[in-house]
Image (cartoon, rainbow, N blue to C red):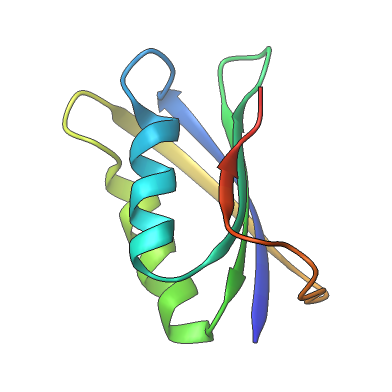
Length: 90
């Protein structure tokens, strides 16, 4: 199992990025969370099977149709296995 902490830059707020991230992560059976940051980026943490994490990271480079992703920064962290479901943090 794997855990990734991700920051996504570009036009990623106000374009349903969080909702689509939640939908995609849930469909991949990943756990974690996603939130908007004050600086205009989106931050997310994903936990799950490594191949599904990679698919999620690929999706993060595209995002939903109305978004424009300029940069994705991802760092692997120690897997915790403590998260339940995938949620949007406000």
